[in-house]
Amino acid sequence: MVRRQRTVVLCTSAVSVLVIASALIFVFCDRGTDINGLMYSAVEIEAGFGDYPAKGSGFILSSDQDSILIVTNCHVISDALGESVSNINVRFFNESGWHGAKVLSSDKTLDIAFLTVEGSTDAKPVKDGNSRSLSYGDCVYAVGNSAGLGMSISSGIISVPLVNVTYRGTDRVMIQTDVDLNKGGSGGPLFDREGGAIGMMTLRYTGSDNSVRGISYAIPMSTIRQYAESLDI
Image 1 (tube, rainbow, N blue to C red):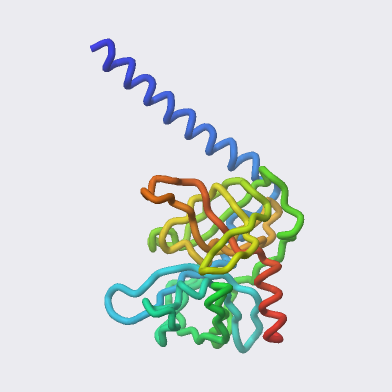
Image 2: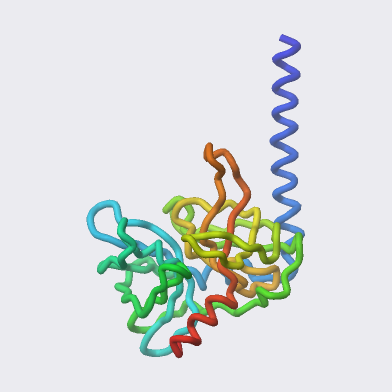
């Protein structure tokens, strides 16, 4: 009985430490950032037909009275062969209905896709942060359709500001963060503590036995903007 009681106490203490640590990180990160406001720049994405479409995330780059420009990962809107599916729908955080989206351009190697939605919305485009001036330990927020359960927000830190990663057979520079990326969260924005978008959550490292947690990678915002500029978007 004594051993069992000690075990319970230790486990409870460990959980308490984790909860307190998570709370401290979130409080430390909050320096006047409009947390709720960040949610309005992100969108849910469903791609494909049938009862079980692929689910992912994206965020608004720009909008006007006629159309809304959204960026997401190419793999979010692609089938098993890597080809863009024809049925893509997005839902804004402040709305309950879905809107049909069209692929404006996509790049499998970069894993970036631009979508357009006709019409206007009250949802706001992201404000760009500086993905080239990050530091170890900087606080960040990630917004996404985690596990396909709807939009949510998580906080963490920059683990490595810019790191070389081999992804899809190509070496590229990405941002490493300890914010866990769950299925459905790909394509969502990564914000700095001032609320500026610094990247797009893209992949996570799980190890050969799928046991590794807390190693996720985001495509820098500078890479996204460079691709957009090359398309004259």
